[in-house]
Amino acid sequence: MSDDFAEFHDELRAVARELLGKAGDAAVEWPALAGAGWTGLEASDEFGGTAATFTETAILLEEIGRAAARTPYSAVAAAGIGALCLLEPTTHRDVVLRETVAGTARPVAVLAGNMVPAAGGETACAGTGGIVPTFELVQTGKAVLLSGSADFVLDAPSATVLLIPARAADGALGITLVEPGAAGLQITGQPVVDETRSLGKVTALDVALTPQSFVPFAPGAAHPLHHLHDRAALAVACDSLGLAAAMLDATVDYTRVREQFGRPVGSFQAVKHACADMLVELTVARQLVTAALTAMATGDPDSSRSVSMAKSFTGEAAVRIAGAAMQLHGGIGYTWESGIHRYLKRATLNRSLYGSPADHRRELAARYR
Image (cartoon, rainbow, N blue to C red):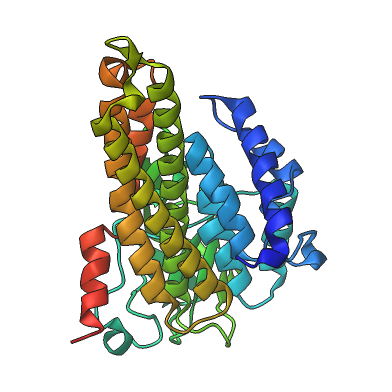
């Protein structure tokens, strides 16, 4: 997060907060996000994008978490666009990327939300970075068939094109671009505690593909599936960071005006200590997320370690902060009208998506064995 771009980042954050605030509890209109240039942040100028980095995308992801917004942008920006940019340039890929920037397509990468890289996977699954595709391509005569399944795919029900990682018969690792309505492909909604999110199970049973449907990863892409998983996990950490900040701000504001025994409850020592604890956790979480973003932006070969640290700590901290916010709001904090339940449920789901804190800490510990 270079200071050279601080002014631009502040402006981006302010515009995002205003745009998301207009939607309230309703779903954010996709054309509005595309019109604001969000879908083209990381795309190159030849596709109508701005050639920014994931650092700028992360600012929007944090603001989405702060607003607990209903939008598939997180899945599209983190894994969808990330996957398209890692592929070899082909006509099909270029068309999808150009439509994504224009706002007419919503590509969703089929990454199972309950999957984490296996500890020591660099040797166990060479070329994948510890993540093995759950879909496979089978050549039968002249036809190529896709089969497999993935659970808890974020925003799969709203996708206009699915980006399904698979390994071709010749061993090449890449992405198959499949439309949701393809014969043999099924997307089943999976209800979760967080009502602001949409997840689904993607199942493919002998889905016939055209030759141009499979696009291999570019030769220079090292461990692309692990990289995509890191982007998705870090995106969730940014979301958790934003919602935690929103809960701290709401709690401080409320305890300043809520009175008990003739004085604001924020003047009580126990409440002060609780808010201070929330601030400490939020500050540590922000430092870890910033370090992970810096490592990813600079191409640090050990960026996965920073991502695991950020995801594990921020996921737990957000749940604790949202829980403390509900308690410090008193009885009103437990009502539906307060809206705090939306943040607590979202934080609870974020803690589990793309690896629980225990999963990521297990992976971190494996590095020192």
